[in-house]
Image (tube, rainbow, N blue to C red):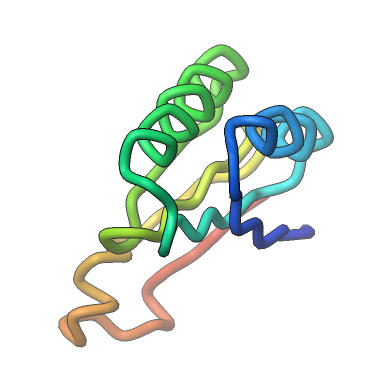
Length: 95
Protein backbone atom coordinates (compact mmCIF):
# COMPACT_ATOMS: atom_id res chain seq x y z
CA UNK A 1 0.00 0.00 0.00
CA UNK A 2 1.46 3.31 -1.02
CA UNK A 3 0.58 6.60 0.65
CA UNK A 4 1.49 9.85 -1.09
CA UNK A 5 2.01 13.15 0.73
CA UNK A 6 1.05 16.29 -1.19
CA UNK A 7 1.26 19.93 -0.17
CA UNK A 8 -0.87 21.60 -2.85
CA UNK A 9 -0.12 25.13 -3.93
CA UNK A 10 -3.02 25.75 -6.33
CA UNK A 11 -6.18 24.21 -7.78
CA UNK A 12 -4.02 22.67 -10.49
CA UNK A 13 -2.82 20.14 -7.90
CA UNK A 14 -6.36 18.74 -7.55
CA UNK A 15 -5.97 16.72 -10.73
CA UNK A 16 -2.76 15.13 -9.44
CA UNK A 17 -4.49 14.23 -6.16
CA UNK A 18 -7.34 12.55 -8.04
CA UNK A 19 -4.91 10.69 -10.30
CA UNK A 20 -3.28 9.13 -7.22
CA UNK A 21 -6.71 8.08 -5.94
CA UNK A 22 -7.62 6.59 -9.31
CA UNK A 23 -4.37 4.59 -9.18
CA UNK A 24 -5.39 3.09 -5.83
CA UNK A 25 -3.10 5.20 -3.62
CA UNK A 26 -4.00 7.01 -0.41
CA UNK A 27 -3.11 10.71 -0.33
CA UNK A 28 -2.24 12.80 2.71
CA UNK A 29 -2.97 16.48 2.00
CA UNK A 30 -1.08 19.17 3.89
CA UNK A 31 -2.97 22.44 3.49
CA UNK A 32 -0.79 24.50 5.83
CA UNK A 33 0.07 27.94 4.46
CA UNK A 34 -2.48 27.71 1.66
CA UNK A 35 -5.06 30.49 1.25
CA UNK A 36 -8.31 29.29 2.85
CA UNK A 37 -10.44 29.73 -0.30
CA UNK A 38 -8.02 27.66 -2.42
CA UNK A 39 -7.73 25.01 0.30
CA UNK A 40 -11.53 24.74 0.48
CA UNK A 41 -11.83 24.37 -3.29
CA UNK A 42 -9.19 21.60 -3.30
CA UNK A 43 -10.96 19.80 -0.43
CA UNK A 44 -14.32 20.10 -2.23
CA UNK A 45 -12.83 18.76 -5.48
CA UNK A 46 -11.05 15.90 -3.68
CA UNK A 47 -14.14 15.07 -1.65
CA UNK A 48 -16.23 14.82 -4.82
CA UNK A 49 -13.65 12.64 -6.51
CA UNK A 50 -13.34 10.33 -3.49
CA UNK A 51 -17.12 10.07 -3.21
CA UNK A 52 -17.53 9.26 -6.90
CA UNK A 53 -15.12 6.32 -6.59
CA UNK A 54 -16.52 5.08 -3.24
CA UNK A 55 -13.44 6.40 -1.46
CA UNK A 56 -13.13 8.47 1.67
CA UNK A 57 -11.83 11.86 2.77
CA UNK A 58 -11.13 12.34 6.47
CA UNK A 59 -9.85 15.33 8.39
CA UNK A 60 -6.82 14.55 10.54
CA UNK A 61 -6.15 18.05 11.87
CA UNK A 62 -7.03 21.63 10.94
CA UNK A 63 -4.76 21.53 7.89
CA UNK A 64 -4.15 17.82 7.27
CA UNK A 65 -6.54 15.46 5.45
CA UNK A 66 -6.32 11.91 4.13
CA UNK A 67 -8.07 10.79 0.96
CA UNK A 68 -8.35 7.09 0.23
CA UNK A 69 -9.64 5.07 -2.71
CA UNK A 70 -12.36 2.45 -2.26
CA UNK A 71 -9.92 -0.41 -1.61
CA UNK A 72 -8.55 1.27 1.53
CA UNK A 73 -10.52 1.23 4.77
CA UNK A 74 -9.72 3.71 7.54
CA UNK A 75 -10.52 2.79 11.10
CA UNK A 76 -9.82 4.60 14.32
CA UNK A 77 -10.06 8.24 15.28
CA UNK A 78 -7.23 10.32 13.87
CA UNK A 79 -8.22 13.47 15.76
CA UNK A 80 -8.18 11.67 19.12
CA UNK A 81 -4.81 10.16 18.26
CA UNK A 82 -3.34 13.60 17.60
CA UNK A 83 -4.78 14.89 20.86
CA UNK A 84 -3.02 12.05 22.68
CA UNK A 85 -6.25 10.25 23.58
CA UNK A 86 -5.74 7.21 21.33
CA UNK A 87 -2.84 4.82 20.96
CA UNK A 88 -1.40 5.00 17.43
CA UNK A 89 -1.66 1.20 17.25
CA UNK A 90 -5.46 1.57 17.20
CA UNK A 91 -5.34 3.44 13.86
CA UNK A 92 -5.47 1.08 10.89
CA UNK A 93 -5.49 1.24 7.11
CA UNK A 94 -6.73 -1.94 5.51
CA UNK A 95 -6.57 -2.84 1.87
